[in-house]
Length: 401
View (cartoon, rainbow, N blue to C red):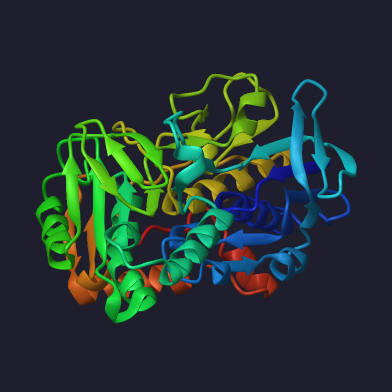
């Protein structure tokens, strides 16, 4: 028997650990039930932290933890999926190809930033979506110190006033001051199409976010969008042109393109529709999890978001359930009733909310400490010790905050 997992993000990592856990509980040898994880690198990119400085440090190796739980790592990118033949074609970096058959497949391919066809965006826009993107932005910011002093050099425009856009924007004044020194006059502008900042956060947290932006001197342009980019900056739908050498796109996500190869229904974000056990509807033998799946968190209409918080728990359920089918034991219905947010606000602290109604629980330094714990401890892989690694992936114990 072979279970193939595509993707080494939070969902893929926990899917592998959870499947290995159930295999261990059932006393099945790894030789009789192979679990294979496919990814270009055996590395977890700590994607929620890519708005921070030094993004090249924000990764964690998975080789040791995979090895200690007897999960096979397959180096390469999944290029094609044939769900009828139950085959995945994998291409390594130098073009070498490998064909993996599977008895069950878990699609944990994550998401990508949605980049619309705005003139100049591809040529002049930055992002913190993937590791390479964040590294490119960080290098660019450091190069600004060698530019002639000007408002264009010192101005950063962040397109998107949602969670990621706010974390990028509130971190930016301190980053710019450190890089530009005493001659710099950092200016940060958030552009948001909605008429309010943080449109998904609700009325409770919004005044706190607005106060933090004011404290940091971050400007906003609300109810307008970016219509074009060029070397000198951005033009908005209002007609305003903002001189800026750094435009960061942080507006909208889509499931990774590989999900389109699964012959199943998807939502507007490209996520595969799944049943309560995270099986892809109408495609036997295939599960989807994390940002690749549209899954109900509860029975009152809440659905998992494209977030690390949901991906970790969904991954644990998907891995458990795919293994359970192969091992002939009951599956476990995915559920995640609790929901929290912890929004970094740079030098203005942080904001912690609980529940889908976003009730504010912590502010300032207290919330900042929680954010630091989340970013530096809680979301990292478990230690490479077999019992601890397997225990960390119990679906009922991969909990919310």
